[in-house]
Length: 163
Image 1 (tube, rainbow, N blue to C red):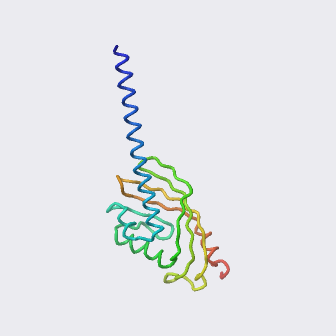
Image 2: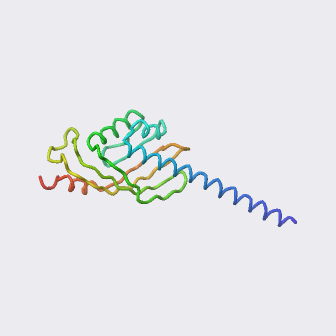
Image 3: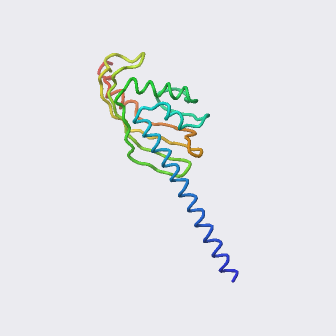
């Protein structure tokens, strides 16, 4: 009888852990889907609200981390101003609950180059493959690290044609 009880308890524990894991994964999928939906709608308020108050975002586009709601709004706002047709397409997701890896493309036309960007880049279309590693706390992004090929971007916007 004790063996049956142990098997029952063990089986119940496995089922409970599986259900909890599936719930965490479903929640993380919702967070990531919401993030990319906000990116595609260029809604900087919703994007910034999707991060924890102490979140850090790392990208080859800048040194160090972007942190805080205002910094994230300003950064994403600049992207959307410089590339009004900026669009993101998720191509693959690896979900481990509180850590999610997302492969995606982003594409657009550099219509309003930011300060310091040469005028010859204006009107250039680009398509970049990227990968981001998200660390989640509950239903918010606590850390995001983005990787992409900067040389591919520079080629597509004509940098090497000028140098």
